[in-house]
Length: 248
Image (cartoon, rainbow, N blue to C red; front, top):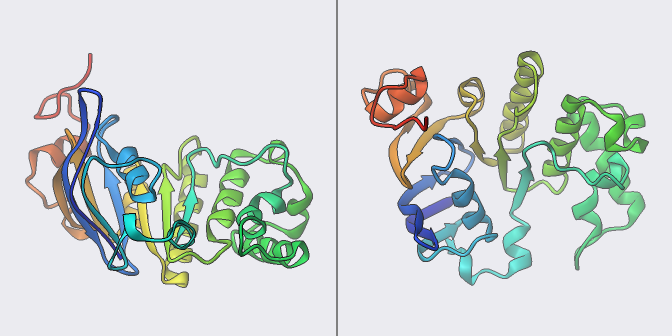
């Protein structure tokens, strides 16, 4: 579903992506892990077309992304942003239905609201939440609303950017379980950026670790603990000593 070939990206003299190769199969859930500043978010932005890569190629379902019609290209994706990133001035249901009411393929408001309420139910929120505003919701509820918005248009591919940031361990577990259920239920392809290894173990089929703009390790989730890769082992154990230099 997603293929990245020899992807490079620089900002001035700072090389962020230095020859990334990766592939996500249709229906697969992949987690991208690595320390801060290793290129995870830039990789996601390049795939989404929010950043223009310097060289290399990105294919979505076999078609080169740069050659796809923009509306067709973006219609493939759903996105759960870090900290939910809801519109404060819109009610919850309008947040969920935002994509459905925009652009050339927008649908009538009544139909969009019905879909939004259905998606809110799917993430465990009652219909009355739809008329509230984001400021009236807890962090966990806001994250659920963000997840409802991500799946509102039934996308083929869903990106999750640090889906459990700011949540307590119990709510993190709830969100991880919801994400896994929904991805499997929809048959969607998922890509998750996270530092939270409990999320990785709950959500991912496959894991890729980035460091210094390169893929240092990739493999199935069941191979994670067995790996002898020094970068991965240092990251998993949180050791100060190892090939990854800790910023002091």
